Image 1 (cartoon, rainbow, N blue to C red):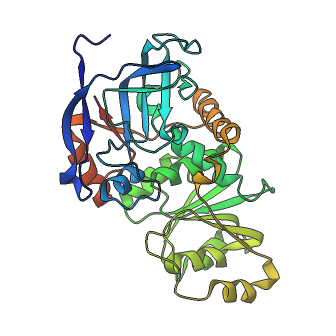
Image 2 (spheres, helix red, strand yellow):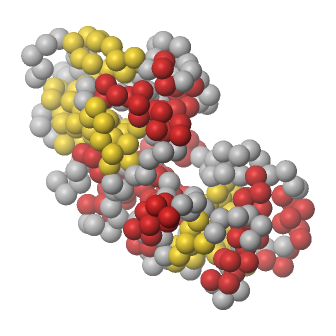
Image 3 (cartoon, rainbow, N blue to C red):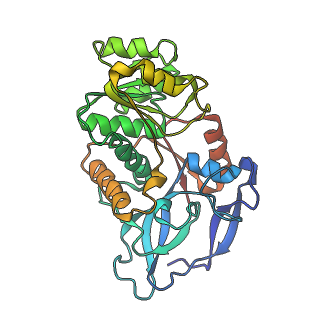
Length: 335
């Protein structure tokens, strides 16, 4: 139990750049009926936190808001009537299990007892805050209905979701072709599950992918950029392949995508837009995906990317890194 009745948290009163994040003292939360309190040991910092901070998140919590969507730590108090978890248990809290996103940039959090995932001893707290990316990766890889696949294309292969995708795909025996924009990112991607790295120029990407796959192409391509790259992903697909758009950082393609599909009619291609929010109402499916991710990590079939650890008090600095894309691996805030 904490000796004080306050805790530190990072909060925003208004939306904007990293400067809107403030370290504040808040009352120590007390678990209500059916709740547990978790003392944070590691807090993940990532893209959705930036969207909350700048006010563009479709699932925006009300202001003043505490960002943060993943927190790993230890149950340190149990509310009346809560019996599922005991004090001292190592757990992960994912805001995907909460009524609203955010809330994890804090020393403590109170949540309904059904929310936390119990962590096996082999999964460290720092590693656990990457599990949401592996949960997402498993869902993305299932988006073609689990049709048999041989190869996948992952542009921007050094990213957090991309490295999780690469590792889960490799654990399933798939070949992973990735793109990366620097020597450091290429090395990082190859160290995190990518089989082959090619140049990511959309004009030449399809021919490079087809050359690597003996003219066949890839079964799945996962695009988070959009624009010309999405069309390049389509042109890189094998017969019955699927391009999955899980973000559009550069905006939608300027060309007619349906026209492109008709031009490639002989390949019978498919497109899926994907959001993990699709399972917001399906508790069993969502928690099942996370259970699979925990099992993969606990067994050593996938591993979390290296963590860059920073004090929670330096959340602004962490967000500057997120805004600049200037970090490889997972940013972990330490309370």
